[in-house]
Length: 480
Image 1 (tube, rainbow, N blue to C red):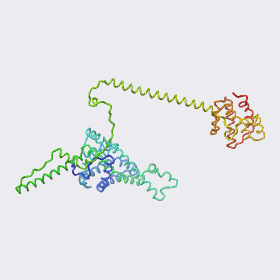
Image 2 (image 1 turned 120 degrees about the vertical axis):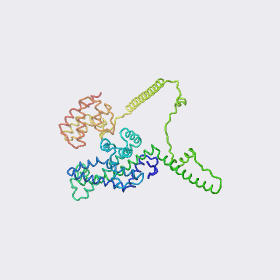
Image 3 (image 1 turned 60 degrees about the horizontal axis):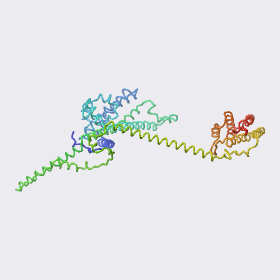
Image 4 (image 1 turned 90 degrees about the horizontal axis):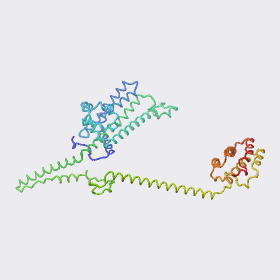
């Protein structure tokens, strides 16, 4: 490999920087790349479309499956361009066996689903690795860069889909009458639901043709970046440049020496650099002037003797027992802390409940209803029944409901506040009333809410039935 003929700058790069370099390579040599691509891809696409014209979807699927073979042609062009002059179309076609034959079967079968194939393709095509050696080589190259190659495949696949989708939708919107009113909501599913047509296959060919050269060049750039890091290409190039300078310096010194001998002057000794001086000259290159600060955690608990590998008086069993004991001690302290916190929570909660119970005063009104006992008639049920007979159902239900709520808050000490609702009163009353009184109160609340909020007038018989039963559940003699 002729490193001195590299047309790109060799320096350590991150994976994303290497991908960006690959895109720049594709833009730099776009003419030979797309010339070779269209010269090979378009005839094959046209041939498959003619052979499978009744099932163009299968032709497109077969074209997708053969994509790695066309990638090999792009890899041949970009590898020649980076290390010299890009080959012409005639030379690429003449050397088709050279770039098409190595590992062709594996590329189309078990390595077809490899998401990092753009970066691993040079291992087979350019290096000629086979079998176990190829697997070991791919493992070494992908140790730090495989993730970037996988993301490159995912992103480029999405770009292909977006281009295909965009071309298809643009066609539908521009062709008059292609989109009907009842089909407008389905247009965004068109590429998936409608039969595959000639225009759809054309759009697929265009989408792949736009993205694929960028994809191959970016994968090759990741491969070059990984090899440059493993084999220190930047140091090798710096040493070669230094050797060239030393060679030129030696030539100048020889010329000066000859001139000195011709002038009958004492010869000047040519200065040669020692290995240490040569290394110092290499380190002065701009490539080695980058600095980076790193922060890492270092264990400082061990003694110097232990850090140096010295013997320790404590055996590994004692150390393990000490670790277990410290862990158990930590667990005990955590459980003790949780227990103390729980006890404090219970104490504070009961104290707050006791203080709240002592400070609780029955409200004078709830839901806009006056609950003071002196505001209610002496015989609530009789007064409500009289209102019901006169047709004043809302007033009758209001008396029954006010009487029940007054009994709950004054007699049973049920805690009701101004922010409570009818459902809250039902839920809290269930804790102090027996089953019969609870069912009666539920009927009363339901009938009251329908009358007060829904303006649904109840039947007189329903209200009179509630009046007859009210005293049995909420009369004063039933106080507890």
